[in-house]
Image (tube, rainbow, N blue to C red; front, side, top):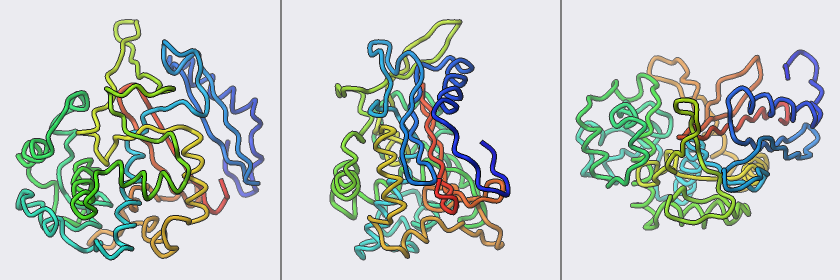
Length: 315
């Protein structure tokens, strides 16, 4: 689907179905679910593949997938809700709320944590992807990552940092007095009717949850569900195509935050030298082929997720 000078024609469901099946065949995936919002506002749900779980023979709009870093959008939303409540300030330092943080981290601001301009090292680089399979205590994560030096002086560069959103989660819980998931359920998921979105907790039996797989030596192997103690507000959520369409509708309607807050969320964060980072609060916002975008991907063991919005094109 190319974007030219004229308004593109929406692809037919059959064309989208063929694209999905191609991705299934090319990547040996088990299943894909998509919610597509057309320019006229109509919604189509499509799916392809044999299964989202070898024990469940169906993938549909209600199938739960790990959404990985798309979780960051909801963390940013919770931060902005507390900003509007007057309980947080974007220029407040992390150390104001978490005085026991490593000394080098205390001066970074909430804004810098949201926009990956803090310089705080990414725990994936230190712990590796295997860390997501283990239960972690927050102080252990921070102490381990703090052995690495700051990546740069805060505000001067951009570098993706899951640790930044891990710290934001701790701040949210400290300021609100609530655990991360109940806070989101009360302030975001409940009001929007996102009834299926929840934690990736491995021990819970969740009807309709897809399992993650990988190919090893020519055969499929199970992948452990992501542990929320390490995924945290950086990547702990599971959701469905249907719930993410509800999320998209709320973003269009700007029904959770005030309009001025949404403007901040989608503003391309400038660096100290005046150049743009391409990132807002939990969203990549750099243009695509001349079109304004708001987008993010999320990848975990056995899963890939993406949300792409072209607001000026109503897509």
